[in-house]
Image (cartoon, helix red, strand yellow):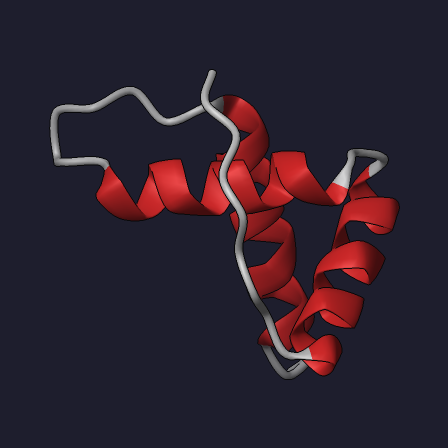
Length: 65
């Protein structure tokens, strides 16, 4: 692994911390998952944790019928 620095607006980092806390992971792990998922091609393996988090986020955004 390589360490890098990243500047984010405070509200964005606050949201990252909150989402990571909900999932029980560190903010850096959440950021890493998001970057890896955004770079994945159609044939790439996506971690199950990323898929589960996306499914959970999707269900939160859908209006209950």
